[in-house]
Length: 146
Length: 382
Image (cartoon, rainbow over all chains, first blue to last red):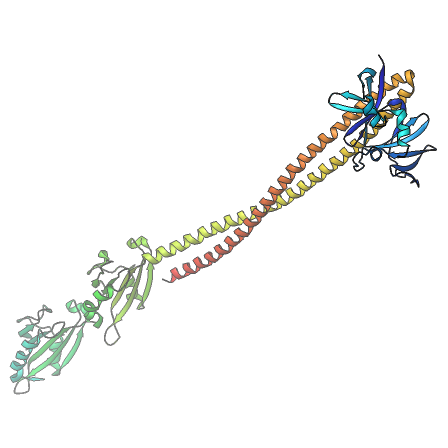
């Protein structure tokens, strides 16, 4: 039986997850975010993380989730997808969970296609539905302008 | 002087006049030293005025005959038992010698005594609580008049004056005496006024006039005003105590309010501490999550570390879960304390009202006290 470890985070009322292997670390949102010219508005800017410049993406804006104030629980989740660092602003990083691979419900191809293959499947824990994002597609998605 | 021939005319006139003169009169004709004719009025007699009675040497009549002139004399009480005026007119025969005398005797009465029967019954009824009016001669009560409301049966006509009696003292001092007598002597408080009375020439003290009036109302009034004063003093003291305790309540409530504010501050401080706990829990959680990520990246080598990371996360979740509970508790504290503060403010207001009211009462009582003092002074003069 194969297990997957997932990092679960919140955007508005929804919970999302990414495979833990794509995560590098969780930090507080830095006060200083360097704005970048000529970039879509969902890219907040760049930060310096221990000598590496990392773009910061407002994922809620990118996903079209209703905007809400950043609170005390808002965090910057630093991802490392194929050695490219991306920071995404999330409302809260809830937990790290371990699930059986088979328990992940795959979305059918049509639905998956509509969402540009961002969502890979759904994890069901008790009453909660956690949307599992496709890490590999994710990088391309968030960094591709529409 | 009267001629012997005119004596018969005098007798006839005397017969008519005897009962016309108020107070009475005695007429007598004396030959040498013996009464030969006597006319007495119904209201007045003397033992000596009897036909056949012989007169002594020192009598007015004998003196008049001896001196051959009209003689008028006041006879003191000691001689006939009452004061008498005697007028003796010598009777002269044809030769000019003294044959005898025509003697007239009047009872000597002080004008007040004479009028006593007229004025006393009216005057006695003129006092609101009645009065007892009396006249004494030098030794005893001679006239007395009770009123419908008040009588003194123990001091009736004929009562012999004693040293302690006011009439006796008036006779001794020859001065008017007005005295209040408490209830111990006659069973009720009295005012007795007694004035000395002198005879016509104002030379000799002959009698006293006294008026006794009951003082029940005045004394009752005085006692009541004294009682009123002492109960007012009691009330004033009680009000003062009340006022003092109202002030104490006021002070206590003020202190209570300060304490309550202190409690609110403390519960806010607790909230601050609990916010700090939340911060630490958040930090710990992030640490736990990062540790988990690090452990996952380390693969199999990081498995043990992963367990630790999991425990850290659980711990942080536990500490964080205390925060809302603390908040709930401090909120409850705040709510209860605010309620207590509100109530204490109400009692503060009430105690202020109480203090004001007791001050007002004190002022009123002071006014009533001064009025009762005036009343007491007034009652003393009644």
